[in-house]
Structures are given as C-alpha cells and as structure tokens.
Length: 589
Image (cartoon, rainbow, N blue to C red):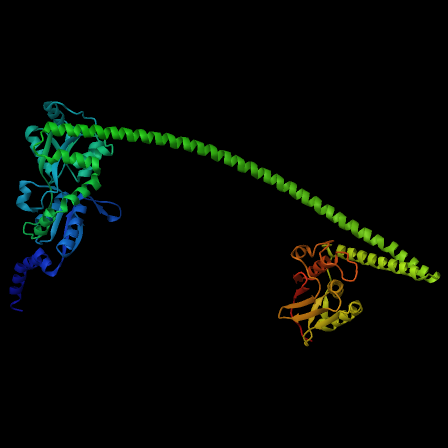
C-alpha cells in the first residue's frame, strides 16, 4: 500500500494519453474497427433534431457519408454516435477541450483564424456568406448612412461564440451606440426577426434563401455582408482523425456526394444560386447583389404563384365542400323520403298481410263449414244408395254404376275428412293430448290395417324395429293419421310387386320413423311444393286411386303439432323416403 500514491500519480499522468491512444485513428486502422462521437447543436438546415429524436441536415448527411467512406474505402468498420449540446458554444468547447482524438463537431462552424488556432478543421464543404436581415417593418435602405441610423435605433440578435457575435463587434466599431442581445440559437433569431418589429441579425445565405422559399417575411439589407473561408467539420487539435477526413474530401466521389447532399436540402434552384454567389471569390458585391435580387424576385414570384394556387385550391375546395354539402343534403332528403316511403310501404304491406290472413282465415272457416255441412248430404246419398241396392233387383250394369257411386261417396268422405282435419290442425289455440305409446305393437297393428290395400297390388309391407320396446309420448290418433297418410300414399303411388318398409329407430334423445317405398319418387320441382295444400304433382296413383292433394300437407302440419319434423329424400323414378323425427328420450319398458 505504501506505493499506492505512486500508482495514482502514474495513472493521472498516463490515463489521458492511454485514452487518446484507445480512440486514435492509428489504432482504428490497426484493429480495422473504430468509433467516433459527433457533437452538435441544432442549426437548420445544417443539423437539427426533429420528431422522435431523429437528426437531419447537411452536416449530418456529410458525417454519414464520411462513415460510409471509411467503411468501404479504408476497410475500417466505423461506428458513429451523435451527441446534442445545450448551446452552440458548448458544442464547440466539447471538441476544443476534448482529451480524446475521436471527437468531431458540426454546427455550421465558420473557418476563422481564431478557431484554426484552437481546433482542426476539415476542408470547407461550402463557402461561408452571411447576410444582414431586419424585421419586416424596417425598409431596405439604399444609403449606408441611412442604414446606420436605423440600426442604431433597433436591437441586434446573435448567438454567443458564433461568427455573428464577431459581426456585431465589427458593426459596433462603426455604430458605437449599437444595442445587442444574446439569443440561444439561429432558429430563434430568425423566428424573432420575422415575428417582432425593430430587430436585426445576421443569417447564413442558405438559411436565408430557404426562409425566402418558405415565404418568410423579413427584409434583407444590402450592406455589411460578410464572407469567410467556408464551413467545416471541427476536430480536437491533437486528433489524427483529420487523416481519413482529408482523404474523404480528396476522394473522387466527394464532389458528387456533396452536390447530392446540397440538392437534397436546398433543391436545385436554391443550390445553384448559392453556388453562383459563393463559387468565385472575385465576384463583386454588385454582382452578388444582382444575383440575390434576381433570386429574391424569383422566390417572391414563386411564393405569389404558390399563394395563387393555394387560393384556387381553397376556392375549389370551398366549391367542392358546397357541392358536397348540397349532395349530402340531397342524399339525406332522399334517405329520409325513402325511409318515409319504406315505412308507408311496410305499413301498407302489414295491412295487406293482415287482410290476406283474415281472408285466408275466412276461407279456412268457410271450407270447414262447407266440409262439415257436406257430410250430411253425402251420408244421405250413401243411405239412399244402400236402400236402392236392397229394394231393386239390378243387373250387372246397374250394379257397376252403384259401385262407381259408392266410390264417389267414399272419395267425398275422404275429402271432407281431410278438410276437417287440416282445418282443426291449423287452429292455433288447439292443443293435442299426449300419452305414452309403445311403438312396436302400435306399428304392427298399423301395418296389418293396410295389408288389404297392399295385397290388392301385391305390395309387401315390412316393419323393421329394434327388439327393445320404445315408448313415445304422443297423441295416438294424430300419429295414426300421419303414418296412415304416408303409408297410404306409398302404396297408392307404387307399382305392383314392390316393397314398402316402415322403419323404427330409437336414439338417445330422438325417435325416427321412416316410410320407404320403391315407387315413382319426386322430381326437383315436386320436392319444392310437396307439403303444400292442393298440389298436383308429377307422380300419379298407379291403379286409378283418387288423391285429394291434402295428405302430405296434413302430415306436415300434424307432425309439427306433435313437436316433430318431417323430411323427404327422393329422386325421380327411384322411390321415396319420408322420415319423421320426434325429440324425446328413448324409454325401455
């Protein structure tokens, strides 16, 4: 520990040297890897921070181009870090007093003799030409004495440590009573000169022309213009990074690089004017003034044209807005009228629908009444017919007529019966009583009931059912009517020597009853209207049997009354399958 103080002295002396060495260009070349830090302060259009901490500007792009040059041409993997200073003077002092060799500074630093004694400069990337501007309430003077008197009565703004401060000091030697004020940045100066009265300041030529292009309202004075060597990037006095910087400026691609950067930020028109004004140092003040006046006139004309275009656009937009409002009003009126018309149409439709329902109900009631009243005369005709057959000794021909009359009476009874059934089924207030029905014996009895009708056409009736008893809570009479209509139709519309199968399936929550036949089937058109009342379908009874056109509609209505569902699967000339599904639990006895 007694030698610790010697180590501290050694470290204090050699640490700056080691730090400088660690970041030197010499080491970066050897390691083929390096890092630089660029200090800057906002000064549009040279370098400035915009939204989301993004940096842009001429000198920012110049440094990125330098990093790319070192990477690609000098084969050194170079990274770059940008650090924003709080003031212009701070950005300069960070580089001026830095012990590291890898610090750079950018902020439109003018090359002056004083600064060249304090820091290293890259070659100038653009000439330095500064103009005197005043608030818009101050006229442009044609006489220097008149200009001096005006400047003595207003206030000058400058950034501390900048060449604008040097310009103000030079002016004070001519105008001793000159009043000045320090401003934080060049942007602040230009903003205040534009917005306030009785102020003056210096501004860089590029910034002035860009402000004019934007339509900024300031006055340029033709006196006290200042020209210097140019703007450059600064480095610490001991830095060896000046070597790759000079190589970059001397490279064959550099002229194209800097021109592309200037065109990007100035545009071709402003860039060409700047180049004409600062290209030849031998240009007289008069020549430069003429160039400036011509450019100002051009920019003002462009601004007037821009405003005229904007005015036309605003007029066009107002007209479009007026037409849009008018169209919107018409659209709203149309929508409102359409809404009223639709409401009226819906009301009329509802009224017409109610009238149709009333008429349909009246029609159904009338059919029920007619059907009910027809039953008595038909029964009387049947009774008289029976008496006539007993009391008369008729021949075969007369008996044939009697059989035809009996068939007509039977068909009339069937039609009357169907009309009464469908009338009762469509009465919404009627409820059907239910009771448990064991389906296997019930269906067997149903099959036996239809055996004579099937035997007459040599049609085989089959019942396929599981052995376990299945119970369905239902109305037995209604279910008999449904299955009777379906079985009767299957026999009626099947040719001789065919099969009709009644199939029972019991599932966890459903009972399915299917009636399958090998008859004529249904066409696609028939299937669309098969359950409608009084429909004449393509298939015809195969033995001259009669059909009222109500059987399937009765089956559908009654099935739904029992809480079930009826469906049809069929193809023309390939038979049919009607399936009844009733939601229930399959119950075993």
